[in-house]
Length: 156
Length: 156
DNA sequence: ACCACATACTTCAACCTTCAACTACCGACC
DNA sequence: GGTCGGTAGTTGAAGGTTGAAGTATGTGGT
Image (cartoon, rainbow over the protein chains, first blue to last red):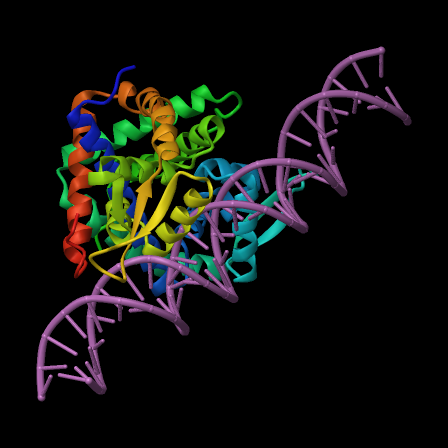
């Protein structure tokens, strides 16, 4: 059994604690200033980038790496809040598309500056550009490892 | 308003998705193989490193960066499972200490190899040592930023 | 000694996530 | 064209998390 050395141990714990604090804070800021959770915000982002501001539920789920069930619930809440609507998929009778409403687009326009400013202030602006790029490489590798490793999850 | 450039954007998203997948997987492995959640595991680790295998609730909460309420619940579940016991604090009548039981120590001994192997296989062994060190630096900076920024949270 | 205020932890209810059914539809094979 | 297995999405209940309010104890001023 190979354990982690001192250095690796420290990095791993820093990651655990830092991530917890960071996500907590970003979520809180969105909630307090825009009545939006971080998962909801991410869904708004994905939809806003999609063609026609609409996306199949499964694709949405994959793109944020949440379970389908979770996305169902999240989208339901967002629908109640008027941020999205559901639309049945013409091409596939089983399919459902989530569609951004004008109100949803507006919510995203409002929230984006807060969110980006938070990511900068609490993360990006605190560290070397080089180091931040390393973070990108590391988690791309992690994602690849987990998506390859998982049969039938190679959509991306 | 300064947005993130392409590269930063990619890194940030890789981080979000990679973290989600990684934590999910590590949690699942612990649950399936050892009936332990990741938060529970972390508490076992903290307690095992503490003098006398015991720690005040508040200190425990700070050390894993969870809310006090959350730690109360987690410890309650762990107490039911026989992994820890609560003990009132002699020095401070308000205080409560969580104490690792022999069963808790055993659970940790059993689970640790699984967990460490997972962290290696899914993260550490996939990336450059340099890059992993960068991750450590980045999240130490994040933690410092968030703990300094927060009045009365400088315990560590 | 008393009071006000702060700290330590718990409780409760609302909310979110997970997991295991469940419904509905597609596609292919006979 | 009926059946079988697979895919898309939802549902409902159980479990975990949050945040505000509650209980109990410590602390400092008078």
